[in-house]
Image 1 (cartoon, chains in turn cyan, purple):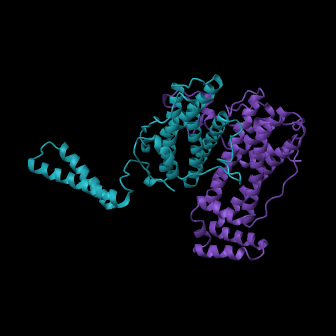
Image 2 (image 1 turned 45 degrees about the vertical axis):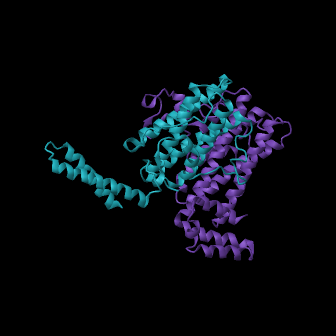
Length: 235
Length: 272
């Protein structure tokens, strides 16, 4: 597969070079056009061979980059959500709630921008989100979604820790996940005081949840429009 | 102790646990079948040697971390247990319910860590005697609700920082690392709620740590030292990439780790 991919890249670059070259004869043009068609065929074969169905979206990269991009994707989703929450506050949002939700929004933006800068050139693009299923006028809908996102975020970081190779990145993920845990507890308490760590999230051994990237996107995917290719994510 | 539970728990995050322990999963199944028939006391040692084999030389470090974590969990569970038994200290209703929930988690953590350490072939450290007044620093810890909550906040925030500081030492064992992370986020949830309980009592605190403010006083400065940073991986988070992020928010957005020595310095006054 790797060879095919190289060949395909080479064909594509030859094609581009060809078009950029001034003297393109009709005959050469046909040749290049043919190369293009061949590369598309190779691409299709590649998809069929080692990727799940037609799942050819944004790639997360490999190794630690993949895990960092995974976190970046989740932080993008959370930040976008809270920005919307504060742009269109539900009617009953009091000053205390507004202050807390504003803090959370700023934390999520800080996380998002941190990952964007830290990953640099290998960062995934800005994801397109769709929150049409959320009623931003409804406190129940907003806080219910916030709870789902925060619990999901905690379980995502908890589940990803084991795949991080570099110790410094593991500590960074740890620095963020506890803040997500603080958010989750607060949101839960806003919905119903005392549910900060109830038995829907904490098991009999006193352990929080962990989820694999696949499990996380099975839930978060409902809000992401951008097509994501999960093939290089661990788990 | 429930060995199968521990292995199941580890398997959730380390699918290769059975392979690590034995190349043949079937052999493990056989082990458990035999294990249920032989004296249970013989099992921890056998299991411990299997884990040693599975995870090699890192087991020593990992056990050290778990013993350290167990000591902190003893501290917390004993603290809440004593608080719950102190008549008139915790108001009935929501506060009593929350402290009861937290105490149950800390007790569960103690048991989980004891079982895990035992399964790694080591005897868990015994519970030390505690002095929750910290040699007289908090004389009303079990008679004044606000003092009790202040000490609780310091313990929970310390717990969060302590687990975070040890994560790197658990990298050799995916199962134990994930379990530790799963405890770490529970401590964060506790910290968040205790802080809200203090806020309800009039303390100037949020669920998250703003700079190195504790809302308690200089006696807990060690607990919050370093939390004020706004730099992460050499990136300034305040107003990062042109976003309006205040220094407060920048510090709140990341919790900081503590080294084992820093944690021991905080905890030592509470040892009788």
